Image (cartoon, rainbow, N blue to C red; front, side, top):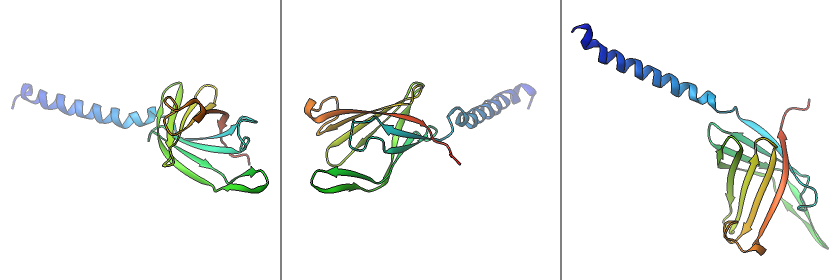
Length: 153
């Protein structure tokens, strides 16, 4: 083989190496996983002020919501206790916002938007249909403020 015959193989090998290096480095383009601590605005719900954490994993395209046990007053009846839990959901990460949905078998829908600049959480809630198509009486909008969680001690 002459050196001219080796060129196509060398070009292909170089292209393959460059592609593999680009794919390996593309993981570093995603932000490291981070945990946000978000608290609902006062007076919006009976659980306002209860911190909920959101584990953001941009490389995997997921958000995991972790909520604590909450006790909701129930008038003259014993309070309603909601157990702690978590849910991992697919999410969309854009430069300005992180969005994700949590839909329940009961017909309840939640659409979340976290503003990446302000840390503001907006949750669109609806019953019976997605927020945009639900009856106004079956919709509510809740807000909260998030900050990056870090060890306090």
